[in-house]
Length: 105
Image 1 (tube, rainbow, N blue to C red):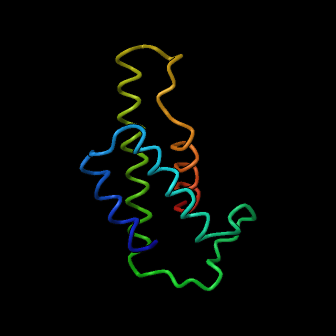
Image 2 (cartoon, rainbow, N blue to C red):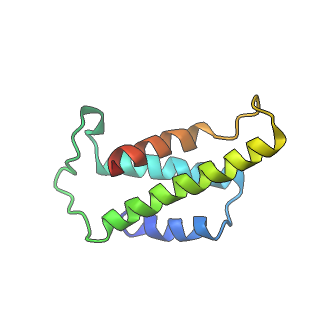
């Protein structure tokens, strides 16, 4: 997982994902982070014996920047159309972004 997530982040930066693929990407990140940090719900950041690669903190920062990009992109679209009833943030994105920000902070 620690080798795959940086490669997936590269695809996101190229903006080749459609909305359905993007949601799958968010779900994969959420499940991957939960599997790496199984006791996050108890504020335990222990990886249960899985050694973290030296570049893992950089990957987390990239994920955080992806969250920021998504928020900016969707906020601009929401602002332009002025349709506040049309929710631009999917549930998989909200779960993934909350998890990433929680781990990074």
